[in-house]
Image (tube, rainbow, N blue to C red; front, side, top):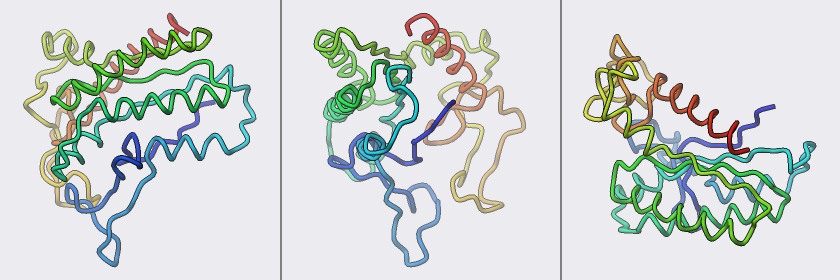
Length: 220
């Protein structure tokens, strides 16, 4: 079975930067005008390891894709934190899962769309090397989103795209859920990105999923 503990708007570590929703990109606030705090990866995993897991943990593939909200929230708040600090925080969560019995972990390297993301991904590789030396019996795989996205940008027609990093399918307020606030293109499969934040389109998600499946079958 596939079980998801992920939460939209989450950061790598609430201890470093608390993730939130509300007012960022036009999405609504609470009735009292406050934002909505969302649990970060550290909080999600802390909650998970306290629960009873009916499945043998050695047979579970723990998968995490995080970093985008660290990047955007860090920039929005003007904190000036570096991506490698958050990558280190993710490594802490790899260690937490191993202590809980995990033997298979897949972590997604974020697309290198900003300097922060490049720092994050670079430190993930450094940390992965150290982690593997320490935990030789644990399989830690890194899914290289930068390679896939780089191929899409370099040869978009090969993947069926007409628009890559400079255009978005959804423009305007794509987040509030209210009618009339956004304009959605008529040909979404020709766009690599969905919105101003840089979320992948459904077509891109399909490509990423296919490539991740290849890695999983080969590595795990």
